Image (cartoon, rainbow, N blue to C red; front, side, top):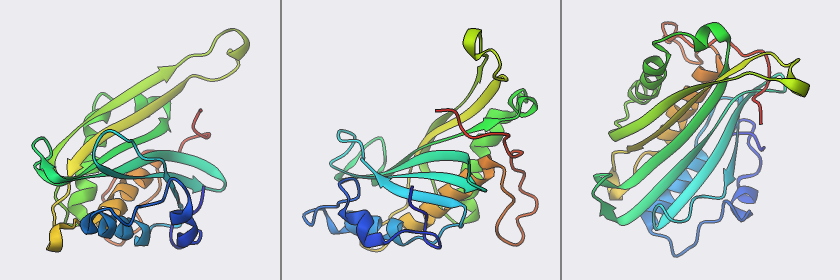
Length: 219
């Protein structure tokens, strides 16, 4: 996976890949939003690549997959999809929609916290607010799951995982273009937080993150 800006691979190569290609016939607001995604400056722990977007959710879509990597260990991963319907969408209350999946493994004591789902959802909304962004028509789920291993896998310790699925409508600015780069940066803040990394910016010491996990995500 190619690293984000600061550790990003050549941007032109990204757009030449089949996953990263945006047709010249795509509407200008959508192309501008995609350019903003590609130009966002992210934390060096974030590795990001374009991936094949869903085909039936909207007339135009662009997708990124990312992982938080530290000392060659994947601490969390996720996917962010930008959808665009020039005609608008009643459920979105706008012409753009962001859809995400974020997941990370947890220490058992964190997985047992009954307030964990509410806390994880507040991390998403808080990450957007911290960057001055609105999340119109926000909705989603927070799921925690546990795995216990038996038979030939019985030597593996039990594992717990948290998963956030969410979508929201970004506010559209000049020319009907949302600040997609800022929304990507906020999403990466969430990804780093769920990975257990300390806050990157000054004044963020009150933010509580998950403890770092003991091993990489299970496939």
